[in-house]
Length: 287
Image (cartoon, rainbow, N blue to C red):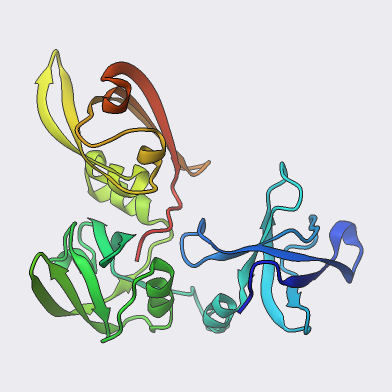
């Protein structure tokens, strides 16, 4: 396993200069910004032409494949870890599209495990009766407390597959056999097609709202829950803040959503303000 500070080497063809070797260190591991899995952050100098090239440790072992960098920041680059490559690559050699299995839920990591925060209508979890607030206990008798580990377990299953699951709701444990579905390219887009936008605020921005009435043709809401570490929390929103949804913009081409709110923040003494929240369509919390 790579540790922060470990020496690494990248090989690529920046600017068409083949077999160029650059070196650096691992800046961080477990970065979560892909729909599935995680990434290694490295400070090794990378340029166009490095993407798809190998990332090696000091012993010359392949530890990842370089795939991206942030142009505005020097030395902030990323690689896909080798364990994800080993899991996914074999399926790419089969005929047709590579299909991954999924449950159709978005979750958050809490002390008790993986809490369901949203279920996609019509998908396996929804059909099995799993709902927001449930804690996913086991998948095929194995317990997972991290999103990335649960995603890895699903990737190892062939499609189609039947799985046994248990989940917790208050003081009771429920078990069932689920037939996994094919994971869509964009879970959020499927949710937008099938569900109300009020409900999709949870996986997108990390807040659950509830309608409390209508005044002058405007629907009034109150925030019922804010997910820890979410966009809503970082914006300073909190439970019991009253708000109105002023507008939505879903940009499929550029892969983002913008939400405009008129809100009275409790943390600001209920002063009225208009805020905009933005989120990428590629969220990393779906299983």
